[in-house]
Amino acid sequence: MDAGYNTTAVCHGLVERGIGGVVGNKRPHTPKGWLKRWDFSYDARQDVYHCPEGQRLRYSTTNRTGYREDKSAPAFCKDCPLLDRCTRSQNTQKVVIRHMWEEDRKKVNQKRLTDWGRRVSERRRETVGRSFADAKPLHGHRYARFRGLTQYLLAAACQNMKKIALLLARFMAPLPSLLTSRLRLAFRLGYSIALCLCCC
Image 1 (cartoon, rainbow, N blue to C red):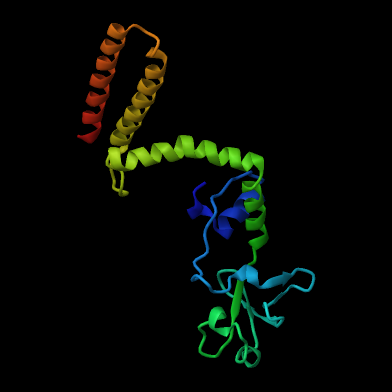
Image 2: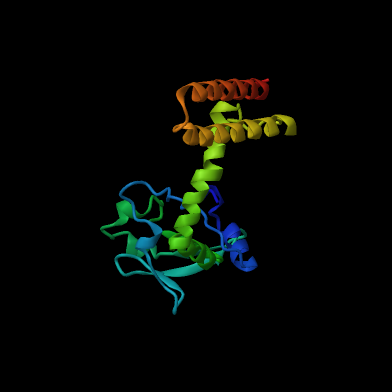
């Protein structure tokens, strides 16, 4: 799946249903040079976070969206040498959030890093990703408009004809040049007709 689906809710759904999904990696939005969440060590036995300077963050609340909030002591953070890379908070308090289904997200990410996960990701790039990448600029599907089933089917037919033409071109290389040129002309004509139908 695309990295946009790398949410705790989707990962929890995959684990709960026993589906072996491979979800793309989502890059963190933390500014460059700032401390990231994984810089804060998590002690699963005590269920607490520790900051790089050794302070224990205390559990504060679990909000409505399922995120658990652990907060630092402002008195400790006030004189911390890492404060300028840690938080912009006015009261010099760091809040580390962790979703209650975070373990499910980690399990799904571990599958992505296996040999099977890498093979599935590569295959997706060749099939689904390629088809989508072609559909956007070549068939007018850059924006989600209400296009209708007919236009999408024509675009899919064009993509399939293109694949067939490319496969046949590989096999026609050893054929005599006169026969090859006539077949190429026929495929170009067929492809351009299909492309015109799709753009209408």
